[in-house]
Image (cartoon, rainbow, N blue to C red; front, side):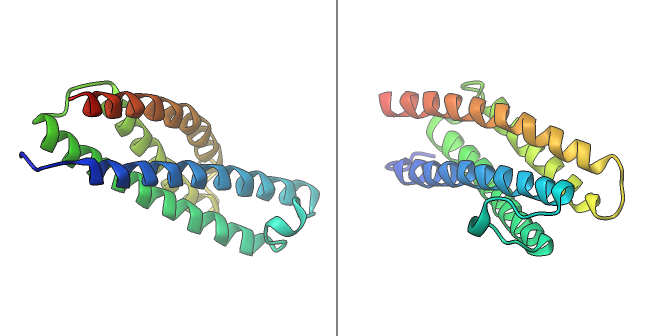
Amino acid sequence: MHLPSFLWLWKIAAWSMGLSLLAYLFLAISGFSMFIMRTRQQAPLGILLPRNREELRSLHYIIGLTMVGLVLLLLVIGIIGTLGHFGNLGHSSHLIAGVTVVILTLISSFSATQISSGATWAKPLHITCNLLLFIGLTWVSITGWMVVQKYLGN
């Protein structure tokens, strides 16, 4: 595919990545707040988050679903943009980093749906995936920056 420019696609990817990182931060804050509310029976962070446990859980789910959507959008943009500009996918470790983040995000979101059903494996898996996502998001950000530099250099 030889389109005039993929710059518009990279702009969407940059915004999506920025919003994904912001969603990850909000998920960490709301998840930690749910932990505090469960152990101390009090609402942390005052007026920043809902004081009701169910409202906080709903907010956490909504942000999580948003992040899943953004990560999947990034996957599609990455595949289309890379195939369109370079003709194939194997140009950097960004593909491996991106697929890793997608897999971790999907496992985390699936395990989140199992927590309230009483599956004892779900919460540890969810938390572990989210901790690994920090590393994955860092890796995909660094490799993504390298891909953008490579694209701008061509």
